[in-house]
Length: 196
Image (cartoon, one colour):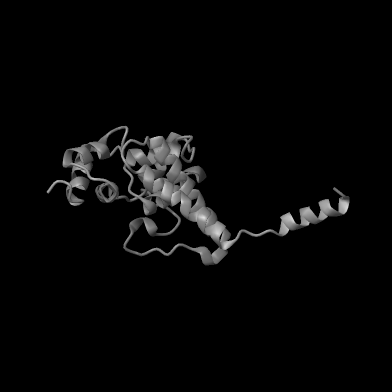
């Protein structure tokens, strides 16, 4: 191969752009994989990796779009407010905790999480890798209705597979599942229509 052809190949590689079909595939495939992982039998680690990948793709798309890539939010969602999380008077978050709180908001806007499940997502190596203390402070600084998140999680499970009332409560409250409290899991299952 001559020096001129190497230079031409390098030039072509530098100007190559991602086509529309490839771009759509890169954006859509993580959603499809995550949807399949919500079915019974898959580990929480697999689910966390899938949702982490989805979040990475969304953040990449927003960052790549510049100012025009802002996600639309509504005022009805208390988590969709400004960048600063709500904190008690006198309580200050560190930079790491503020970043963790922003990550937590993004997760909560995508899917339902329990308090413990969200802390785990933020602090595990398969998740965001924040210190447990920072993740806990970040999650506790947010105003979150955990019951409503349990309803959201329950509806997501029911949209994919059938569950008995007891089975759904167990999935939502299990330490290997979503880690909601028993009362939150019962509320979520009832509101989602599994216990009627």
